[in-house]
Length: 154
Image (tube, rainbow, N blue to C red; front, top):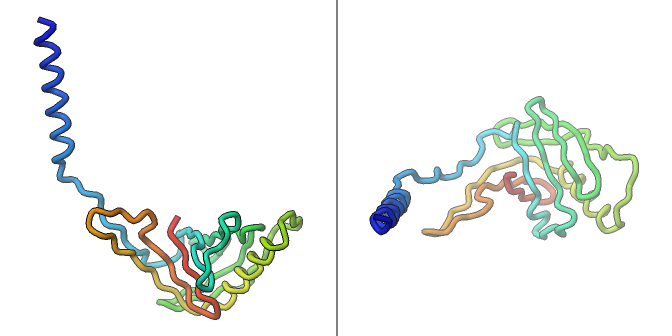
């Protein structure tokens, strides 16, 4: 009797495994955002260089035209104006009064704020994945201007 129960359990487990593996529900393909408000990004390239891991600046577009984030050392705020593929930032200000960061980190943050000030346009891009390969950060934001900035969607 216990052998029958054990075999029934094995058969049930095998059936569940096969059903799970043959499920037709596929993960939907990532899509690029059509607009910036309400999105949040992590800097991955600045002027062709990868920022140091300890300084990863962020960029958050508010739904009210505000922009905020972290320079890698200090928080910042400002405003943005987007129309089609045109994008500009204004009033970018670091909001922390105390600066406890190493000089090289402060330099990275200052360069990031300056680069945002020179932005003139944007485009979002979905990175293609090779067959059977999953891209961890499939959507990126490219900001054009005096310094090219590339972000990944958070």
